Image (cartoon, rainbow, N blue to C red; front, side, top):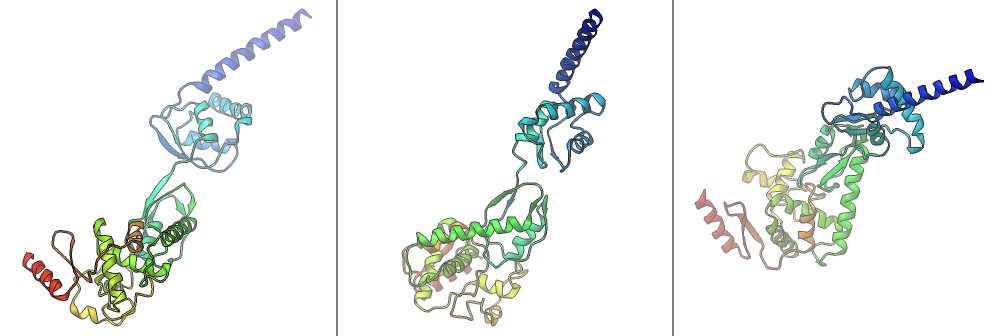
Length: 320
């Protein structure tokens, strides 16, 4: 009996030492020299452990392996280890690592889609974005909303594109609902198409409602829009910028996108307009202006008569 008590006591002392020593390894600072994003693969505890050691987040050796595996089992009620990309801080302990793998938000990457890009340019950006998977088909022109989108490692390009298209549809529906009713803007698609032309005509935010008013006035008067960006779209088939200046000969190209040639709106948008351009068409400026020309200072001069427009054109030529 005495021998049993001695053995039991020795065993308890040993287990106590192991517990204290294991706990110190569990909570002591790790070997990671700087904060690092680490992609945790799918698999069991050993798979995760091996990857953490490979990434030099967790030190090699039997003790670290034993403590990590034991800690995973003992704290199993706190949740499963997730496969995702996580930001691991400098010198993260085993305790911190398990907390991150179970509860931290995965690393968020961002993709900014600028206003005014064509569908081919948007697809190029999505295809070049890192950490996404899969392929996408070229979407309809003007079907995505330009803004910054967050995504995680391994997210599908197809799902991201669908999210962009859903954002556009929701925004367009809301803008259409809140719009000022106008005879020249009969449908949400009309609004989207006009907004795409406004987007390409100016980068000056205060001018967008004025340019929208010019195009709306022209439509109401059955005048051709005569917008240079629509000619560029016709010449490039929507693939991007024209590598030269437009000529008068270009205005004669027979294309439904060339608003010098056709009386109607283009059959589709000519780019992806931002929300500000959509709002400009939904709530255009007041006025009877039907012309505008670049003024040489980054903006435009607006006029309501041909004689006034010709005067503005002459002033512009003098500044060149």
